[in-house]
Length: 158
Image (cartoon, rainbow, N blue to C red):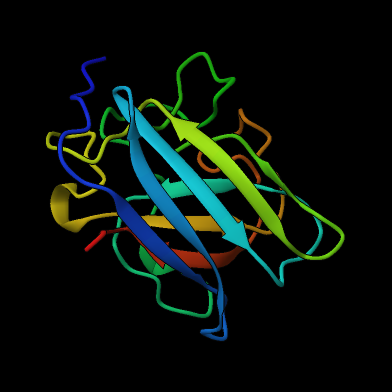
């Protein structure tokens, strides 16, 4: 897989819930040929949650289906543990503490902030989506991760 290096910018996403309330932020920075994503959220249900990069830069409430499917420029199957995967937008689950807050760093080596098909700004951009349940890491197309509960459009930082 040819992933072009992250070239020139940082990015961010303001994460909002289905009612339009801001529930967190994500800061994206280049990390090798991939991206490091620092996620800070509050007001979410405690427990394990899936987080994915979706192919459309849209976050229309209440279900965020406008974000489309997972970012998948190579047409692979879903899941970090799938022999025919993963989607470029597939990432590890994260834990929301009993306080409803999480402050985590997730790395994704299959995307970048530069140019080319793996750029998070390709074809009008992408969105970061948090799901109600954890990703099972194998089931196609979305890992049985449940409803989309928060969404943020990934934009270049100013």
